[in-house]
Length: 111
Image 1 (spheres, helix red, strand yellow):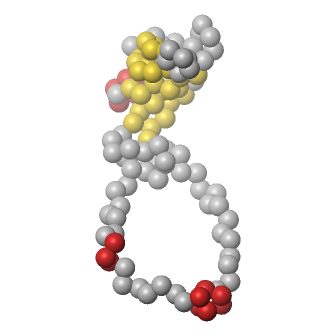
Image 2: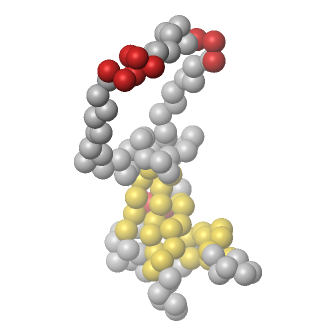
Image 3: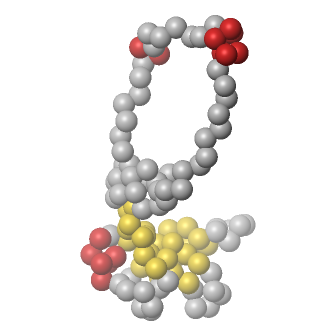
């Protein structure tokens, strides 16, 4: 096992309805007077937070495993007790299915 990662539930933000926009759109003259300033990308790392793009509607506990036979890296989603039990460097048994044409790992499960 190479590492483990926890991804919390994503933040739920209400979406505005199309009729809620009460601000008028700016005219072309107003747009011409505005100076375009390009913002620098945020240096804050969002990995492992609710702002993580991989976050879904439930918590995820991921264990990253390197296969002994072919050195393939596989991310295995496990439940919390399994995630807490394993440590980096542990050897674990993983069952998985390979895609027929692409060789993609599907349905990996750790025992």
